[in-house]
Image 1 (cartoon, rainbow, N blue to C red):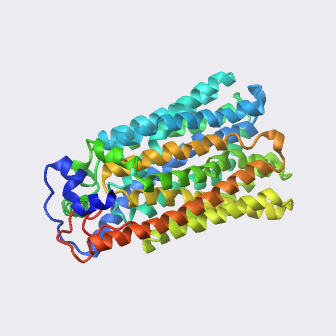
Image 2 (image 1 turned 180 degrees about the horizontal axis):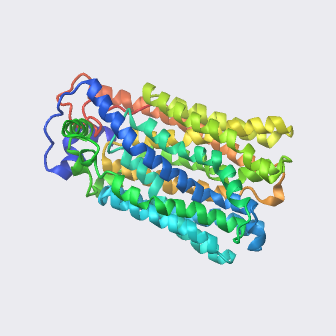
Image 3 (image 1 turned 30 degrees about the vertical axis):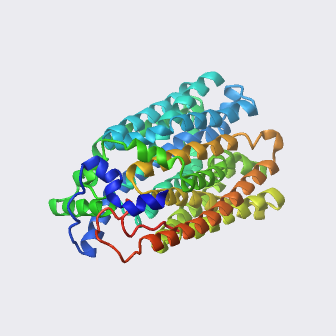
Length: 484
């Protein structure tokens, strides 16, 4: 099916549907000019996206720090009730994944501001919860707003960066999660160690939630709607980003925002490649979602005090932050993302195997490094592979919706596999995470093999040297080949 689409070329894709005709041919510009524009995009967009995702991850994961700070006792929670706070968050995260498409249909700066304000407000309101039911309602709504942010930003990045550039930016963005976790414990300790009139756990929610609300104006004024509307680019640089967009998808950048090709979207939902990466995302998310929430508990179970447990969670997360950057950069440079995913998944799986089978505290702590590095570097590479191997904006959006709907079911599962009754070693939870990381590795290896087969078919049907146009090369253009 995909081969037939590719054979027809970009005129049959979303680019043509949106713009009536293919835009003029890309304007030639040298590599230095391209790098200058790319650097400006990086410096003006990535820090904002990065900081906002750090805040999102803090607002999502501080439920674990709040539990350590006394929330469970204050609300009279059982182990099962506490687990439901993570479960309900990811249930709504799944239900509202379609909101990713809002970043294409509506102006991104408006979508970003609404989403940031929504989750910031709800993160703050958690401080006022008086019962399990009240906190459940807040977490339900929090998941709805956060569902639109992280996957939506990954999607938005594909409108600004070329195919061989977007993976590292996904890694840079996603690395905010382990970096946030690096200092989340210390921040939580600093906030909750004072003598406030509020209960410590309520103060934690209040401070971290308000920090997000304050960022709303920044999202509104500094998220560009498209590359050629970025205020930080001069007229010459805007022409370069227009040329980059024509080379990428065959149209002007602004044309790509404001509509959705429903046929392209639905076609992706029956594409085997999209389902492979969705199942990989499911496997990785079992570990990705559970680690920040339960790591302080796991470290406490090793015999450390709650304060030391918070502090000892920082070094593994910092290593994970570095691995997320390194692996996505290498995969972009080599265009060998399948092998990279195989390695990161195996590393994470080995870490969990050690946690499940070894009792020596030092060895188990080393295993936490392996687990964190493997898990947090697997996620952005899966997302980048999704963006690499779908040949239109609508298809890329559909691919992200699918992997998040399927993948976040893994997050729901993860919230139920670390009951306190199975401490201190949590053998079942560690074993389940290990199994799914190895499952992800197998899927990555298999998908790479299938893509090699599909590329050989494309070589026979449309030799790479037979190029009649340099426009729309990423929208199933003449030289399109699947990223391995």
